[in-house]
Length: 122
Image (cartoon, rainbow, N blue to C red):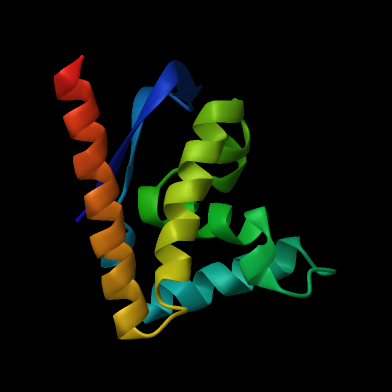
């Protein structure tokens, strides 16, 4: 399922004005990720562990959104971090076992329920 990231400001990428970015990370194929890795390595010759580099996440975000890497670099702080965090979350989800991922989802859901209860009490 695609993630829609609402941006704090409007950006002009080419001829388009953008107020949100749709990251369709789940639709990336293995081939897409291999091509993204090749692009990343071409840009970052000195990088050693791609999973720790923002450039890797941004390259994947570019593939998942259809927005040029250079345009994503132009995002301002909060918007840039939102895109990175969504992408890194996707990339890191596969690092643990299936049980780890399931527990993470349960914990996240419980935390969201607590937040909703707090909001309802206000």
